[in-house]
Length: 307
Ligand SMILES: Nc1ncnc2c1ncn2[C@@H]1O[C@H](COP(=O)(O)OP(=O)(O)O)[C@@H](O)[C@H]1O
Ligand SMILES: [Mg+2]
Image (cartoon, rainbow, N blue to C red; front, side):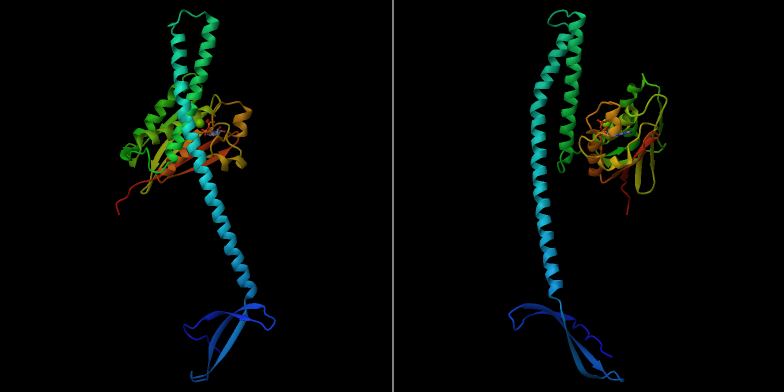
């Protein structure tokens, strides 16, 4: 009846065999007791652990290489982000100027335009506006991803944020046959966060729901909360998102195969912006969707609780 010495454990040692090969051994010393519990001697055991040690060494090396690779990728990503951000800044000024001139042309500042000319200028103007909004989205995204910059944390009432976001999208419903229901609690729902950024999340989600839902459908926005979490749920009865594409939903420029097939316009930046904003607020975003049936986006935000 051998029992390991209390606290002794095993010790790893290296031996050089006669043939000069080095081996690792795990040595341990265990007491032998007689029937009365008296220690009468010790058993020394040795286990050859050379292969295990070598495998451990290889694993440690592999992990270090992987860590370095991740670090390098992160650096590349930062350089890329900085590049996108500075290019966007540079593009903003000339496009704003183009938009200004097209507006003046439209207004007849440089003389009256005939219908054909006016039509051409309007196309110019619409496309410049699209470019500008794309650039603004890129800038917002890089601003949100930069640590700690651009966030004004205040106590805000989430009900007001949801209502304001919905109000921005509502005019696009005027020429549509869509039902929009908004369910907001009666009591204020205070939350510490950036009002404009959170409103942008609501605008992006409700805007998508409206954009990706065919006529006759329904969009529902609901704000609820329990003791710890507030939830904004935006549901629609629209085209849905194929299951195998859902994991890429929050990456930049992602557009589902359905959105592309049906030529529904968009840049694919809205959800990555919304996702980044929600994460900055310590929250999480989830999606449930089925092609042809509809989609639900849920934004969960952690409430401050007195502890
Ligand atoms: N409510 C929705 N229903 C169906 N597809 C959606 C919905 N919301 C987002 N998507 C899909 O996710 C993609 C990314 O959304 P987003 O980043 O807002 O880009 P955009 O609206 O510019 O296309 C969309 O192009 C669309 O394919
Ligand atoms: Mg969108």
